[in-house]
Image (cartoon, one colour):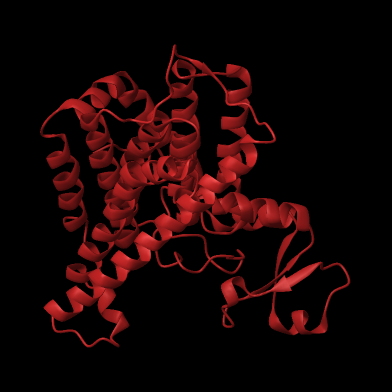
Length: 377
């Protein structure tokens, strides 16, 4: 075992402390107030409320609306709504190759981050003194921040993969990658969901994973697209990892969220293999790297139409498969239809979420582009 000096342990405890997070929130204009002060009002407050409509939660004041909405938007870049819109949009409107790289790294990084959380079991910041603006994941453990991991991995995987595919100024891409990942990391402090140690460790772990895996990206591409066992590995390995996810003494959303990510990764992996076998990958034609697509008056509405139609198809797939899988599993395990708590049981949660998001990944990678072709989009 690695032994740490007392000074190092003291520094780690300091970086993991809740007061640092609360201090950052106050510097950004987010203040915790008790109910009596809140009811009297405040002339300095621009926005007041309770986090996620939790009436029993401490109330807060927002004194800097610009930073407030900037960080809320940045935090949203780590939620499902971002992944189910942004990553597929890269596939539909830019380059499926880049989407494949992003999905692969996103899946690996998020699985490792989620497992580390539930093995290390370090708590999130305390409230008070911290204002917590999200409650869905409050029961989860804190270190590392998977928002920080995902933002770092996605930003820099795109930066490292894009030069061979698309012509752009690398310095501009580097600035955007640093800005995006930094905003997401800071948003986790602002929303009160992570300590500085959680965020720093999350970003560092992602950089280590990028460094370790980067030399093997081409090899993985070749295996994923060409090997006859690729679809078998792409399906069974994520399914195995979902079922063997570490058990906790209490329910949190980590196992379900991890299964969602692994399912989406499995569906996309199989879909990309199928496209390669069919000889229709929808990748840019001609000499690479190609110029960035021009944003013309005609291209913008076309891209927007593809985006809207694609999202409708994916959300429709998600809803249909989720409903059918839950009904089938409830019937199989003889669970009453009105027992919503049964969704937390592993034998129901894992197959339902895995089937749902594997289907979403398959539809995204195989079907949506072919619908675009049929409709002339």
